[in-house]
Figure 1 (cartoon, rainbow, N blue to C red):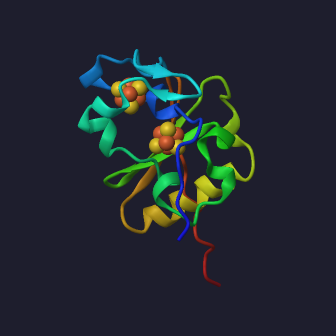
Figure 2 (cartoon, rainbow, N blue to C red; figure 1 turned 60 degrees about the horizontal axis):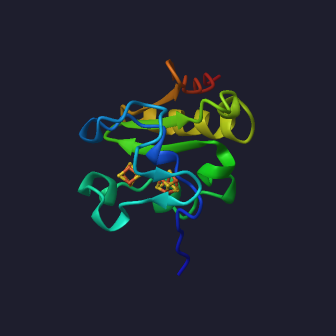
Figure 3 (cartoon, helix red, strand yellow; figure 1 turned 90 degrees about the vertical axis):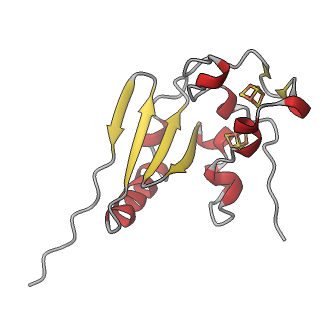
Length: 136
Ligand code: SF4
Ligand code: SF4
């Protein structure tokens, strides 16, 4: 069975705000060694221990969704699919294949009251679901 590892990715130790660690968004955690991982790995908080982004849990996502390739990380929060974009690559989510996939996810999520939100630094974008073609 295919398994995935974070490898050199440390995006979830940099992009999200983590109140428990007094870590602001888009700044590395004090325990993060960029490109290597967590210097307190064995003693990291449960919050960190329990977190896996969508690329780690959804084996159907292609290699282009490796956060180190996509320059963004994706995870579900209830009805919200959250996309945190690396501010060093602020347009990555507008490029293909990402823009089309985000649109597809927004359209699929809307059927169940869900939605897709993209955060790029201080900017927040809600992906507009495709409007179904009108029946003739
Ligand atoms: S964003 Fe995903 S792949 Fe990257 S370190 Fe976090 S869980 Fe691992
Ligand atoms: S404590 Fe470790 S795993 Fe948690 S955010 Fe900081 S570097 Fe990442």
